[in-house]
Image (cartoon, rainbow, N blue to C red; front, side, top):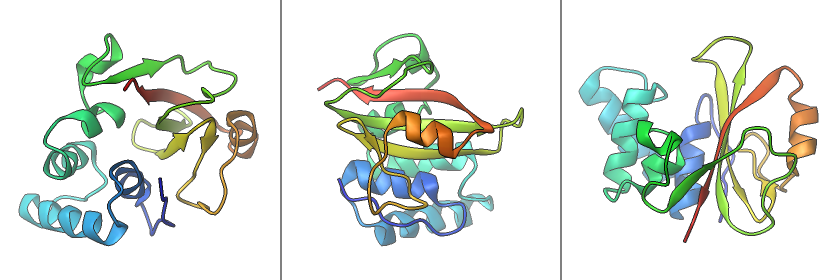
Length: 150
């Protein structure tokens, strides 16, 4: 998994690219096309959902990103939600972690994780553990963590 450094408000796009092994430039192209067609900002959930559908029609990416409502209760498309109270990420596997800041639903951050380490698109050079990431983001709470099951 290669995580590229994000531009302004691009954490979800970087995460999509990393999970699909697609360069960020290609993800940006799709995002700009969708955003222009919908006359909306690319980082809004409804636009992210459409971007994810175009990049991966199977639905697996949407499930990993937490864009499918049913994935919260059950395993969907080879993806399961883990407890947001985890002390550490699984040593094997990969998925997504999503933070929310304060009580604002629209203010958050998302990053891919693999084999127990989070690769933050803000500084993707090296991974960090969940406890380290929590310490670096003390005013945030983990909203959800997803994991691929296959």
